[in-house]
Image (cartoon, rainbow, N blue to C red; front, side):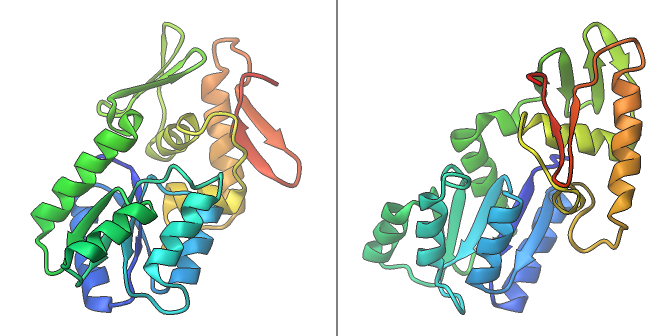
Length: 230
C-alpha cells in the first residue's frame, strides 16, 4: 500500500470511476471532484500528494485550475497530471507551460496512468516514495508500517499509523479535524468529527509513553499539528 492521496478532477463519470478504481487498487487514497471549482476547493482545503486534472471541466477549466494552483503558495508545488482528449502538440505544450508536470491523452490504460503517477511522484516529490520519513526523533517506515521514537519502537493501530504518517509529511502545519478526517479516513466514509480527537489522543499517548515530550500541538479552535518547535 502506498498511501499517497490523489485528487482526481474529472467530470466524465465513466473516466472518473475508471481512474479511481485503478488508483485505489494500487493502494492510493482517492478523492474525486466533478468540476473545476470543487477541485480547487478540495486542493486548497486539504492539499493532496498529486492531482489528476481533466482539461475540459465545468465551472472552471482544467487549464485555469492548473494556473490557480500554481499561483497559490499553499498548492504551487502540487504535482499535476493533465488528462485530455486533445493530442495536438500545441495543446500539450500549453498544458505543460501552464504548470502541469505530465500530460496523458485519452484513451489511456490503467498501467500507463499508474506508471505516470509513480514517475511524477518520484521526480517532483521524492520524499513521498521514500520508505522512511523522519521528523525530530520520530521515524516512520511507511513500507513496513513501523514507527520509532528515538531508539524505541512505538506500536500503533492502523488508524493511528495513518494519522502519524499524514502529519509527519506536513510537519508544523495545523490540520483541522475535518481535514484529518478527509486525509486519514477518506471523504466517502462517514465518521464523527470527534472521532479524530479520540485517535489523536491514542497517538499522543503512544508517542509519549516512554517519558518523551508531546510532539502533537493542539491549536484551539483550529486543529492539530506535529510540531517540535513549540
